[in-house]
Amino acid sequence: TYINNKELWPYYEKVLELNVPLFLHTGFSWCVPGRSRYCEPWHLEDVCEDFPDLTILAYHMGYPHLDALNAQAMKYPNLHIGTSLLPLFGHGLSKRSQKMFGETRIWAGIDKMVWGTDLGPCSDEMDFINKF
Image (cartoon, rainbow, N blue to C red; front, top):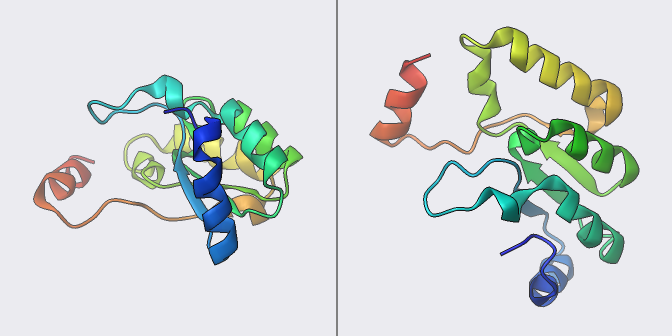
């Protein structure tokens, strides 16, 4: 469902009550049966507005909608940008990843970036990594 589906508000309230960060997938969904339209960064605006005290980490830098996510993170202090899978772009796609990281640093700020990946050690994922 959409990130800003009001049916998720009780879930967001519980996350806020537990005082833990909310991690959300943003951008293109390359996992079947996921639909990218549910993960577009501009849907975060409603969540950030209604839950200003909720710490939100948007995975995958909103790729390919980085500009929209950077603008949202610049606007909302509680919204942070997670690099997730994108550090892999540094292997073979370094100019693109450098540009993405640089734009996020300029627009959202270095303090809004969280470096890491959500890939685990399973063999399919390691095969993917080793291709780079």
